[in-house]
Image (cartoon, one colour):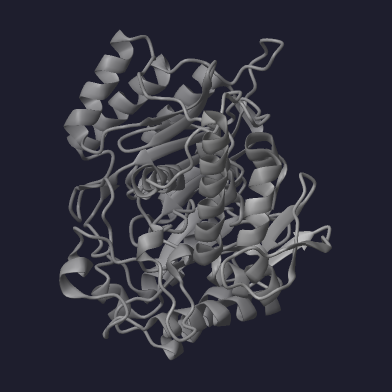
Amino acid sequence: MQDRGAVWKNPSELKSTDGIKITAIIGAWSALHVCYLFFVILRFTLPFAPALPSLLPARVFARKPPTAVYVHIPFCRRRCFYCDFAVSVVGDRKRGNTSATMARYIDTLIAEIEVTPLLNINKQDDRLPIETVFFGGGTPSLLSVEQLERILEAIAHRFGLSPAAEISMEMDPATFDLSHAKGYQAAGVNRVSLGVQAFQDNLLAAAGRFHRREDIIKAFAYLRQAGFDNISLDLMSGLPYQTMAHWEDSLNAAIALQPTHISIYDLIVEPQTAFARYFTPGIAPLPSDRATADMYYLAQAALAAQGYDHYEICNYARPGYVARHNLTYWHCDYNYGFGMGATSYLPQPDGPQRIDRPRTQVTYREWVGQLALCKGKTTDPTLPPTEQVVETIMMGLRLKQGISMASVYRVYGEQGLRQLSRAIAPHIQKGWVIVEPPVTPQEPDEKPGAKSHLIPLLTANSQIRLSDPEGFLMSNVVITDAFNALERASANDKENHDL
């Protein structure tokens, strides 16, 4: 799966009772790609995001031109009970070569690619070829091989495609056979993300999934026979009726297949879904917060013992098999997005621009038509430096190596680093946040009611990261405190500027 990432909640929704681990950051599941999910959440659940403290350069990060492409294929045989994303249900018998709706969508998608401005250009005006392509959905494995080839040819013709590009495709068990797998591999796909979710038939049925355990085993065998050596499996914790025994069985079954990559996602009950009508988070038949935290601990221990590197909150990889495309999002790099509901993150003269596409077939077709009339230009706003820093913190703390404080210093200065130092000092003390190189406590904690002790002061050269697994589990709390600290720094800066 392309990482749908963790749904980061509004601070007003955060709570911690009796030591129960907050797991909201751990994950979400399949639907629109992570870029869309994270950035829509940022846009609508960060009313507290710091205001621009002063006149700052629009570009606070040195990013390379976009060399990553996400392609959204929205079609599914049925809508899973937990899914609230932009999908189109085509039923159990339709595929790309038998559906007029899918054929029309592919035509529109290619038209969008053809009118999109070339921004993968370096300072010497050389075109940088695309390094990663990700087909997400929906269910891309409902595409015909010919449709997949057409899309890849359009990308290569418009932007260039590196011979060493990682080309990933989400595939669902029971939606393809050996001939499809061989065709996709011959067309250029070299990495597959297989949507397993669980190995128990009753849990799969309860989640509205189309496949069963036997289909998973068959699908994995088809992929190996077709020549795929880079295969990722997706598992979901927190499902209705799921027990620790179920979870341990799914982990063991996944490990036994020896994939190169495993993604672990925690169920989020989203509004407007079937699950939201049936269930209440934390109340049976959904597992409790404590139970899902224990599932996270078990997954971390089991996969680490088998040699998988826990390189990101939700993701584990064999050496050399990290998801290159997903790193684009976690590094906040520029990327192209195409298709219904997809999001681009692209360079513009006055800063990064995020472009969100409509979430229905009709409105998406109209949007592409308008895009063609405007010669690929849109009116979407660019992101101010403060929002770029917010996203860098949110995304970067998902990674094992964490983030540098250099961008915080460039935007917020010493005042921002001081505020951030005070905010994360308790988390450093608890072992959730690790600072490298270590910093010596040197400033009194001035919080009202705080015990008298010195706190470590971050510098522009500091790197902070979350511990594994405790820090990852508590990342929601850490990130909330970090954002609030930067908001205070902005307010102080504005107050001083007004004076």
